[in-house]
Image 1 (cartoon, helix red, strand yellow):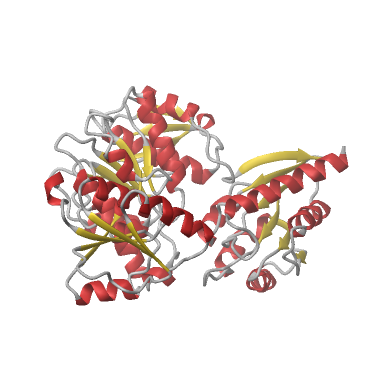
Image 2: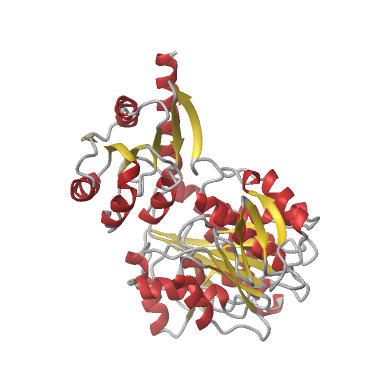
Length: 474
């Protein structure tokens, strides 16, 4: 914790004119710091944001993301800026620390601030954090889902120590890299799979940044029993004495675990006699959608809530009340006996594999920007479920080659187009391959920016195409 007086007169450079950068700049300026925001962009949107900040007395330097302003005492970076950025090299040469907005939020907390229940992982972070917030709310606690989830955590902290009882905090690997001081009440790593390696440099560095979430935990380090790498991170963490390792599993749980027994989510961790007792928390049907990876998300959220002392009934009520955001295995419509499901958020192979495992007979729409990923393992594991595949996007050839190696009998449609009608054709061609009882699943396993602004726009295009198909089939 730092006091307001410690920020007064500081010369702080904020890297990035996005949501978190603007939030940090305004907060620090409000505390008396002299703030300069730097960003390599110079387009109309950047100029509008810059004008707004300059009207508040905050300096903005556009078009230069490399030069460290003279006299800088601290650099506060937005999450996406790579550690190798020239600005940070200049800061290192000048002996200036670089931290992120999450670190600033942690330092700004008062002595009676709400504890953090923190969530990270390659996939499922947002859903789990939102589930956790829903459970905490059902337990009568004042809470908010914050961090990487969209609400800048600095803004929430500045609401004051008495605004919340506990915070559900989603943290990306980027944010954790720049947040060395954060110490959560309890934290969970949901899973680990290769992702963002271009940013981190290696899987080892990526894993290490994820593992930072466990440092200094007071009550529980929650890990995925089926993902040994998450348990290894718990073993390596320096936690407070008495902090427990709590596993979650889709199987029957051992002591100190949460799991599933006969369609019931149960707790053998936070009960008086975990050797002999299990507490019923909810039914699988209370989780929507009840796909395996979403059940795992629910168990992780329940573990964090139980670590904070939430009653079992609140877990059930919170899960029943929760609905995931759009484009996360979202059922769009049934057309002529075929289900159409939008999982545009499956932007990497690990997420797509979880999505494909939720359905028995699939026509798969996939492709986009691979971000250096390979697809052999994904296709090999899903081959028996595939009735067909429709491939779109810049790196579709990589998926087509994996299908040829591991599922040569699966018919493949390769769409060599990126115009606005490409998704409509993809859906039409998928419908031609599908039979009643099948699922047409868009789980691209790739990023969207080759054809769409973001995964949301890709999902909306899919949903529009499905509705168009339904109207012509009526």
